[in-house]
Length: 96
Figure (cartoon, rainbow, N blue to C red):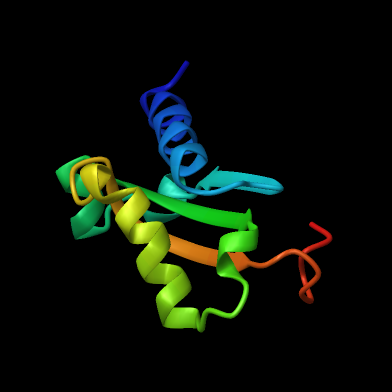
């Protein structure tokens, strides 16, 4: 298991503690940022897609804040950059 695969497992645990997740996908995009100054610090670049009922009625910023709060202990050491797609069940894009 690579270091980022181990990190992703920890991210998943923390997200499951916070949200009633219907779908979760975390992709390691660190290889796309090799040589980037932030990559040199050891933090990875990740893309997160999450479907959870807690996002219903929340705007984009509130959804992102909720995800950042759930993953706070990993920022900025394990997570340097995070792309977030946070969706409530039944919304467009939730059939991922």
